[in-house]
Image (cartoon, rainbow, N blue to C red):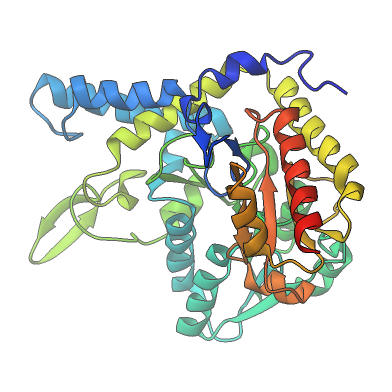
Length: 409
């Protein structure tokens, strides 16, 4: 089975210099994109160009470099708005990443929470979409309600109507699980939440690298994601929020840029989106994120998704070749993420032994301890595929696993 018929994988891989190297004497196979994706040369070039030619602080500069930096920075905001189809650039807020994005929202929404109010969080969430809500609950007396999953790693959809009630104020759910790869039916979930008057917060960190997201079509109140999983630089992320929701939130941090006027008698805050962007922002990172989105815009997205799914199907076909291999997460609708165990081997040992063969995967609890407890495992090994991976990468992974299994089991 070929996955590259309508997809020039050789041309794409030539844009990622990091992939062309040896690790422990073996050609690198990078299967850890769910943790942090690699960056194409176009992103690195854009960041380099900014620092070499346009580096200055943004907004209020009285010189050409400041004007150019500001134009680059705000152009990146427009690029993100268009990429996720937000209604207005006012709805795009820069953060350090998904974690800070959720903290910003949780901190703001907690101002309107009262004792006994309920927050729905699913069992498959990343810690970044659990702990901020726990902190909000501790501050306010609100209660966390856990939405369960089935053995395949899918939400128990029939539970939602039982969870939603007059006390429910917030529903925080991942679009795609970082461990299971499960794609949740977010549009239908948001519709039910909205009908109950519940605010929806969607963690899209694992979704935006794999398929196009339209926040207006989803009709969610908030949607968050990180640049570094979207083939852009680390250090920057995005909060999308409906304008009316963002207007209602208090500022997250105080300082420069987020103000309109300051005196010792009081301060008035800036308009959106700047109300939430205190201090010097991540300018070069915004430039790099724009370059990443533009890079993806030059790829046939349907062909990209087909390529990734083809890789995953090839991986599934080879699971039976590894005695004792057990998949964690077998949802019907998934992105190409494979979490697994091999009987008799610790996940960390699998990762170490694969690294000796030049193959990079992730091991551990993946910042999802409640999910690990659900499956009664300490952690898993996780191989996550991106559009720059190949069938040869998949085969190297499974050949490596078979070699390990024969050596130690």
